[in-house]
Image (cartoon, rainbow, N blue to C red; front, side, top):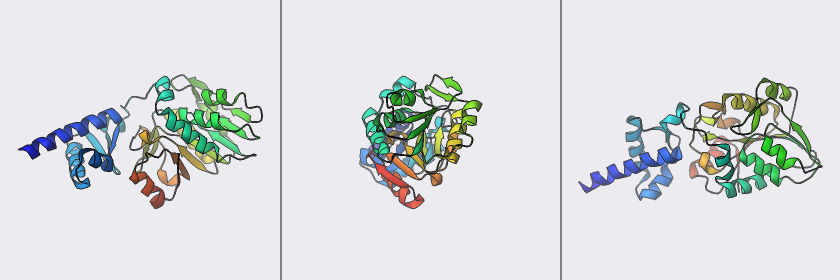
Length: 259
């Protein structure tokens, strides 16, 4: 009976974790509960069969996330959560930018940290993010191209037909792409459909696509897909990246930079 109680209690805790975090990973759960990977996979299959969660590569995600029901955090919350990780990621991303480059910085709080970290050198930055614009405004050597459109106050960025149209004909060296969800099977996703549309246009314009995200986004899936992981050139994240992500960089072929 003790084993049965232990199993039930573990599965209850796993259910609570996936609801709190949006996703869980097999390896981290095995370490947390002191059980084998096989035992955790059985737990996830059991819970998935009952609709508690949906299996994903290397773990599981909240079933609500598939349908877009997972709430998008507020702008204020995004700015402070995982801030130290975002600062390190922003600094690492800034090291890739050289004099003469033209880059797109996507909307998002990690992109703002990248803008803060950029040196005041002769580059061109294209963005639709108000926070990125504010961070760059005092750096006189940087040429700023602001994509207009309708301001979405939820994340203080511009979207819409005018924003997409402003990208027409642009060719840039690299795109720094923000992430709401990063799943090895379902790709890079976002909460907001116009953002996904704009991001896909950014990808088309870029010679190199670089995702910048802290590790809390791994395993999360939002409603609108931007691109599959196979189209990614580089991923910059923190050192808490799970083994599945590290292995995928070798299997899929994208560069992985840890900050």
